[in-house]
Image 1: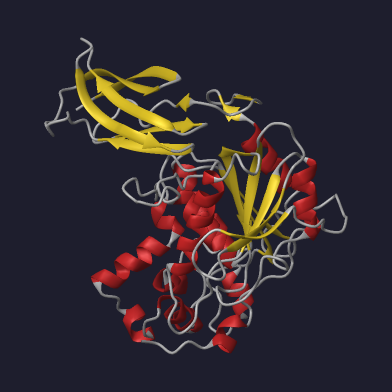
Image 2: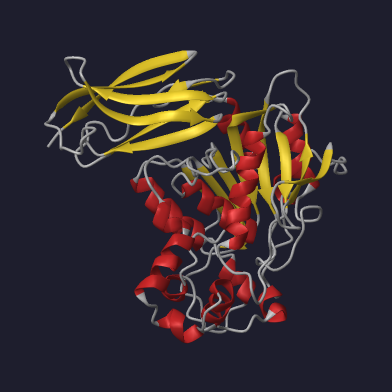
Length: 417
């Protein structure tokens, strides 16, 4: 196992230029309404919460600090302008700590903590006057890395867990971050971003393996690397993403002697993600600083506008949205028509017994996708066109129905072979 070099890893790992260039509300950061709320079993599993003033449940943005996964803190790693501007728009704010890496703690410990924080907030939403279906993620550098990874990752809820928190959805409505790394694959980064050996030494600390192992990874290690990289999780049902960088755009790959901060915060990380998400028709915006090969600075308050739009409106079809309280929703499946598989997404404003079923044109029940108690939150379910006995169904029109004690809705889908 590679020895963990804290001093080496920390240099350049954290960006302290946060939201100042995008903020209009310039005030001292208010005191949180709740401090050091414990969301898990580790000492660093704590967050602070600022409540938005509202008689109705509000959206919330959860922020994860930067620091290269070995430093940083929830109190100093979030900028006052982010807190003030979001609160002014009626959006609550959470700033969370998570386990830091050391000689015995490696990926995915910080990521799993961040997931737990989302589920904990969702579980306690009523207590804090939060709408559990309207959660956005924010973060800088390492925190941005985690936020994008969670946003693009498939559902990580464990429906069989004895812990009710772990049974809740991990999906979020949007991701707005700065200085994000969108891949944690050192071989990819060596070719795409910068040909410096430091990429491997940093990644060795991240995974707790040797540099040699990373350069020629085993199948098992490559699977872990792919799992850790947001780019590999991109699918058409991902939430909107906004990423901005204070660094200027320069040609890549950077030279072997490039400054590490320039390497790890290069805007190309965001551009490569946008290229992938654009092909999937997922809304993605990437901004970066002036003075490089191309200028594309973020307009003032664009990040705040993004959070307000995505968290205080719901989609009513392509190019349409409506501001309203978010309740029960059964979304159109995607893709439709479909061949191998399709994804069905739905949202629950409260806990209850949930049944998601498939019927054929005659009204015959052909498949039961969900039949269990579920907590409030966002969910998705894949269907591979097979019936409840595992037999492949023929091409045709089918119907899927979401039913709870207080809600029922049916939509149509088409299976084409």
